[in-house]
Length: 108
Image 1 (cartoon, rainbow, N blue to C red):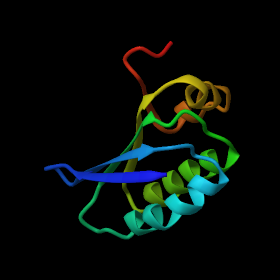
Image 2 (cartoon, rainbow, N blue to C red):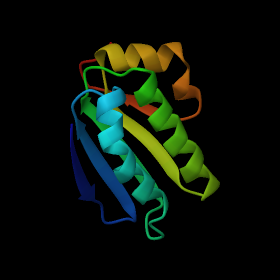
Image 3 (cartoon, one colour):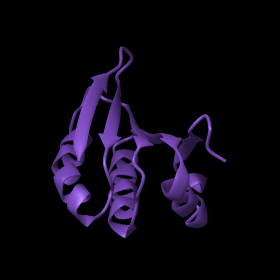
Image 4 (cartoon, helix red, strand yellow):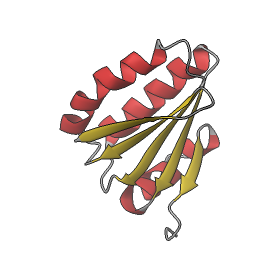
């Protein structure tokens, strides 16, 4: 799994995730996500899932855990470019009722 950070000008951070958000991928991603919670200057974090084709319970757990920790610190989390199987899982579990989810331009 590859992670790319793109700092935005307005105290927000865009994180591009490349690869599957499964148990192995999330074990690589978790230290990066843990670090984000404690960055005082960040208020909004967006995870771009455009290059994530598979999301399992480990991925959902990582997203929800990050969301709860950010929210407790007065910060926000959004998901963008969600498509395919990850979108189906997120909709099935109604994650989008708590976290802002933007689908990929060509996703159904």
